[in-house]
View 1: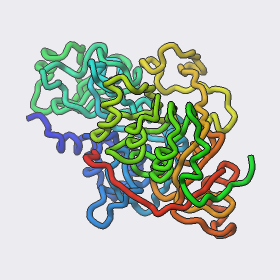
View 2 (view 1 turned 120 degrees about the vertical axis):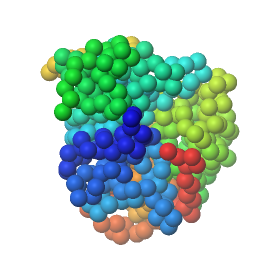
View 3 (view 1 turned 90 degrees about the vertical axis):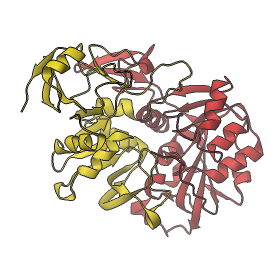
View 4 (view 1 turned 180 degrees about the horizontal axis):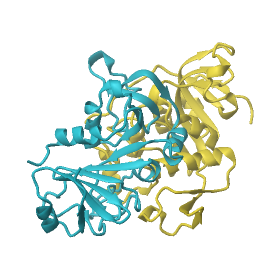
Amino acid sequence: MPLNPDQLAARVARDIEPGSFVNLGIGQPTKVADHLPAEIGVVLHTENGMLGMGPAAVGDEVDPELTNAGKVPVTELPGAAYFHHADSFAMMRGGHLDVCVLGAFQVSASGDLANWDTGAPGSIPAVGGAMDLAIGAKRVYVMMTLFARNGSPKLVPACTYPLTGVGCVSRVYTDHAVFEIAPDGVRVLESFGTSVEELRARLEVPLAVDVR
Amino acid sequence: MSRAQIFASPYEAVRVVKDGDTVLVGGFGFAGMPFDLIDALIRHGAGDLTIVSNNAGNGDVGLAALLKAGQVRKVLCSFPRQVDSYVFDDLYRRGEIELEVVPQGNLAERMRAAGAGIGAFYCPTGVGTPLAEGKETRTIDGRDYVLEYPIKGDVALISAHTADTTGNLVYRKTARNFGPVMATAATTTVVQVSSIVDAGQIDPEVVVTPSIYVDRVVQVEPRHYTVRGAR
């Protein structure tokens, strides 16, 4: 069976090393936080100026001056720190973040990422911190469905949407399989109810197999 | 730069803004948005403004209200499109406002450069993307970079938590966001705060924005909003 979004978030969380500094993109990647047990000591970075971000705020915890990058009110954990935007992005660009998890419209076989603009007529482009994160974190994990609603693959030989970053993606976590973007090509690390033959039939990307 | 002055009203404090100015507006969504200074700017009426801010307004208040008042010619921001950015969306689709999308880290660093006297800098963000088209690039130690230029403001409108009477500032939680960087990058920095204390009442070790970057301070009753439909 393909993974549901919650199972996919749990699968991504399993690959995050204890003690890592991690940025979770807005939307689906935010769910990864629900699967990071406190005892592994992962520190969440939010680009609007905080390390040590806690879960979403509820009830009396809501403070309009304490939000995540999606503008959702959140909480702070013991050991949290606040800083301004230039420092926050220096943490990315300077290579201090271990992992970021981002959503995507498309990822190419060489790790190019497209996740900010569909280029559709009438669309309003909005990049936020995606380009900075894509080139900044040591490991960039993408979390997405493998196929768009119209059935077209989102892991592609070359992106057709405007790029966010070139050759920046390390791993792609999808509902059907986990892919490693390696220097010599794309490897399937794990699949969920879909055989590698089926994946090969539906994707135009050559796949090596490295199931662990 | 002369010492910071304390103003009695937001209206007096923002009268420094002139038609055609570039105005840096603090805030990330609603957190840190200088609502009272923006309302005063609407009343003041300066127009043909270029606004530099992370977003292009949420709901009907703050920056969205300024856009709605027709005082803005152009917005430089990282993330205009949001669930409640209907004021901007409408102006943009009607061709009544210009948009320059800047990656969020470049927005911050370009203002930091302006405030720090840096003429330009090579940055890896955006290499190979449409936002780097037409820009000078250079390979340094095997990595590609894009040349980015400073963003300087005529005026910065920001919000902080507490000022002392000399203009030193401390912020609160993630409302800090762009405030400290914008304060350095404008000819005149105007700050609204929730409280003003005597010099010496803020521990010098915890000052975030030193008074040299602050020109005008006004105390207001804090108003807070949360973004509807935030995700």
